[in-house]
Structures are given as structure tokens and as C-alpha cells.
Length: 295
Image 1 (tube, rainbow, N blue to C red):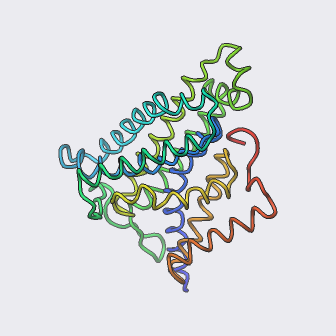
Image 2: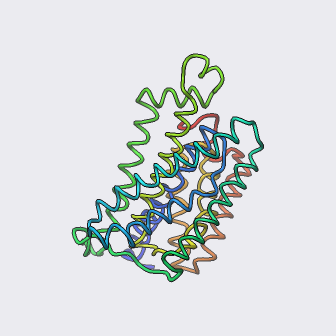
């Protein structure tokens, strides 16, 4: 592999890793705050992609509007899911498997409804005209849109870091994470914050779906296609750690990029599992895992 091919694979790894990071960040902030596993997370990713391809772009032809709608629609839908279903199970002290079954059932239901509504044929979304074409970086050329995905993800993660570390909402979230009952006794509206944070996670997943459409394509099965890889990223980085999601997302992206180029995509995913297992043998909590989100 020459230098040009090597550097191209690094950029591919950063691009793929960026999508993993965006999706995993939503899962990890919800797990860190509420300790629940949202198996329907891929649904919001899929809906964001389909809203862009089937609704916003055909009607308005505006990618930036599609990105906004993908976030807002899934933010509202996520808030409704948390408020009408998950909150009841959590407040009733039900086992975590009850939430898992609820979210998994909703994921399967919504996926089948999407198949009925828009069909099951995979398709590739188009990048906006302003981000089409390639950019020359030294001796290689690379798609402008793929570079945009990397930059967009960096901006979103910086924003999340600021939100949870430098704002009053972040302080409240940390207090709920440490001890929800004491936090509520001091006047914190924990249920409302749980709903907003859950919606934030699903909204980011919807935006990730819009972003990934021109790269990974759009199809109903994307609901579950990346879910296992996302759990690898989250466990590898440390449950509830945004910093861990960023580092592990990049590592897993690189493994899949180079593994696919040198071998096959399936072997690359297996390698990602092998690396995760090796890390967990020495660090059972993952790279940055500890109590609370954001360490």
C-alpha cells in the first residue's frame, strides 16, 4: 500500500468513524443518564435518512432543511417515546430487559412500516450541490462531502462536550447521574431532563441518518445494520463516556477502513470485536469507562 492509498484509508476511517461517533453519542448519553439500552436507536437513524430522501429533498430540494428536519423530527419522536413508554417502565422500577423489549419491538414495527410505505429497495442519497466534487490534498483527491461529515461531527461533539461540561443543564445531568433521588429532592426535574436528553440522542441519530445517506445508502435494514458496531464502539470506549465514544469510534473506523481495503468488510468487523475483547481483558470498563457521562 503506497502513501496515497494509506492516507486515503485514514480519511475513510475518519469518515466512517464520524458516523459511528454521532450514532454512539446518542446511545451513550442516554445510557449514562438513565442506564437503559435503546435498541430502537437505529430507527431514528433510518427515519432521518428516509425523511431526507423521500420527503424533504423531493418537496423542498434543500439539504440543510433536510438535516434540520431530520434532527427535529427525531428529537420530538424520541421525547414522545421516552415520555409515553420508557419513563413508565423506569419509574416503575422494571428490569432493564423490559425497556430493551419495548424499544426492540418498536424498532421492528417502525422498520416494517417504512418498508410498506417506501419499499425495501436500497438507494443512495445525493450530496448537496455545494458539497459535491473533490478536494486535492497534496497528491490525493478526496470527496468534499466526506470531509464535511468529518468536520460536522467534530463540531457536534465539541458542542455536546460544552453542553454537558460548561452549562447548567450539564450540571443537572451530572447530578441526576450520580444520584437521581437526591437531585430531585433538591428541586431538579429529573423526568423532564431525562426526556430532553433522550430526545437529544435520537435527534442526533436522525441527523446522522441524513449525513450517511450519500455515503452508506438508505434502506430499512439500516435500522439494525450498525447497531452491533455501535455497541462495540460504546463498550470499547467505556459505557457512558463521550470521550470514549470519540476515541473508540475513530479506532473502529480505522479498523474497518483498513480491514476492508486489505481483506473484506466482514473480517474487518471481526477484527473490531477482537480489539474490543483484548481491551476489555485489561480494562473491563473500557478505555474511559467510569461512573457518570463525560469523564
